[in-house]
Image (cartoon, rainbow, N blue to C red; front, side, top):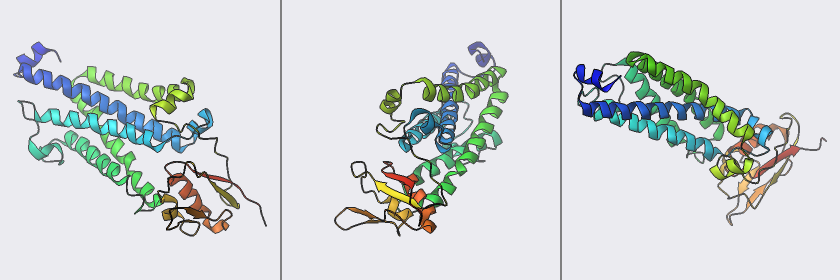
Length: 274
C-alpha cells in the first residue's frame, strides 16, 4: 500500500512508517519460523548427520526459534505504536480481546512458542521423552502462525501474498542449500553443527547396546541420569558412572539419554549378544 493511499484513507505518515516496520518484522518472523521448522525436521530425520558427518547442535535450533520470537515480538509491539490503535495494552499478548480472529491466531502461536522455549530448559526436572511430546505442540504453533500470516497478507494486499509465497519456497531452499553446499566448518562456526562429532552409527533398538561416554565432552549435566537412572549415575564426586552393556529392556531409556545429552557425549554401538 503506497504512502499516498494510506494518507487518503486517513492514516498518518507516522502510521505508514510503523506499518512498514510491522510488515518487515512480520516477514522476518515468518521466514525464521519456516527455517526453524525446516532445521528441526532435517535434524529429527537424521538428514543433516548423514550429509555433513556432524551432529546438529540443539542450540542451533534454539537460536533459530529465538530469532522467530524476537522478530515476532517486534511485529506485535509495533501494533501498539499505531495511532490507529488496532490493539492496545494486554491485547497484544492475550488473544480474542480485540475481536479479530486473525490477530488471535498469531497471538496464540506466539504465546505457545514462548511456553515451549521456556520449558526447553527444564530437562533435569521433566524426562526428555515427556518434554518431547510437549515440544510437538510447536507444530500447532507453526500452523497457527501460518494461518495468521496468510490471512493477514490476504486482508492487506495481494503483494503481501506474493511475499509470503516467496518466503515459503525460499526457507526450505535456504536450509537445504546451507547444509548441502556450505563447508561444515562454516556451519560449525555459526553454531549449527558440533565441531568434533563423528558419524553416529545406526543401532538396532531391539538388540543389545554398548555404551561409551567421551569424558572430554561430557559436562556432567545429568540429563542422561534423568532419562535412564538404571544405567547412568552421577556420583557425589562429580564423576559419571554408567553400565557399558545394559539390559535390552533399558534400550528405550538409553536412546533417550543419548538424544537428551546436550554435548552428544554418549556413543552407542551394537553390543554382543549372549
